[in-house]
Length: 425
Image (cartoon, rainbow, N blue to C red; front, top):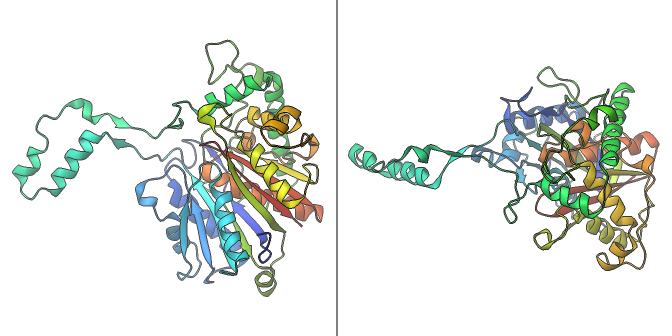
C-alpha cells in the first residue's frame, strides 16, 4: 500500500452484535453476511454494480460455507459478475480481508471491493469421531444394502459422541483466556484496572449510540438495533462481584466474564476503492489505508499468546517513520481488558522494547482518552471474523467526524498473531 495507488475507505456497515444463542441463534454466517452486504449495497447504491472483489471470512463455519464470500455476494444485490473469496485468520479475519482488497486496489488489479466477515458461535459445526465418520463414508460408497450394513459391524454407542469446535490452542491445549491469565500475571495487571477498562468501554459505546454516532454504521436485524451485550449501567461494583472465569483455583485469577469478551454472533463489512472510483460514483472518501502489517510471537515457548500486536505495531511504525504518539485515535481490539493493558505496558517498558522489539527506547505512553473513544469489543462483543471490519468502519467514521487525523488499528488473534493498520484522512 505504501508504494501503490491510494486505497480509500468509503465506509462500512454491520448488524448489531448479539450474545451467543440469542437473536441470531438460527441465522448462521451466510444469513448474517447477506444482511450486512445487502445493507452496504443499499447504503452506497451498489445495486447491480460489478465490483472487483468481495472478500469475506468466518472462523467457525460449516463446510457448506466454504465459499461464503461468493455466496453472500450473489445474494447481496451486487452484479453476479462480482467475484468472491473467503478468508480466515482468527480474530484478524476481516481486517485481513480489508487488507487483501486494499492490496489489490493498490496494485491496480481492481478499482473497488468489499472486505468483511461474520461469525456465529450459536450455529457451530458438530461432527462425529473418526470411527463413525469412516463407517458412514464406507457405507455411502457401498453398492449393495448388505455391504452398507456390514460397515456397522462392531458398532459401539460411544462412537456417537460428537466433537464440538473448541477455542483451545492446538499446540498448548490452553484457551485464549487461560493464556491471557498468564499474560496478566507476567505483566502484573490488576483486576480493578481490567474492570475499569471494561466499564469505560460500555459507557463510551452507550454514549456513542445516544449521540447518533452509529446511526449509519449499524443496521437493525432480527428486531435488534443495538448490540445486546452492551450494558450502559455497568459499574465497578457490579463487575467486582464476578468470579474468575479461567483461573478458578490459584486465588490469583483476574479475568472474569465482565472484563472478557463473550461468545458473540455478528457480521460487518467495509467498502474500499480508488479515489477516482469514489469520485465517479459520488462517494466521500472517509480515509485512506496507509499501511498494514502482520506479525507473530512464539507463544508455544513462552511468549504471551496475544502480544503479537506489540511487535506488528513496532515494525509498522518503523517502516513509516512514525512514533507511537503520532495518532489521534487508537482502535485496539479488546479481546480481554488484560490484553489491552499488557500491550500498553509493554510499549512503555524499556526492557521489553529493547530486548524483544530491538528498539533503543520505549515506544512510550498513549493518551488514554484516545484509546477506543466510542467503546470496543468488551461492550460490542466479538464475533471473531467480524471485529476487524467493525473497527475499520468505526475508525474511519471517527476520522470523518474529526475532519482529519490518523488512526492506529490493532487486533490480536489466536495462534499468536497480530494484524495492524494505519488509517489517515
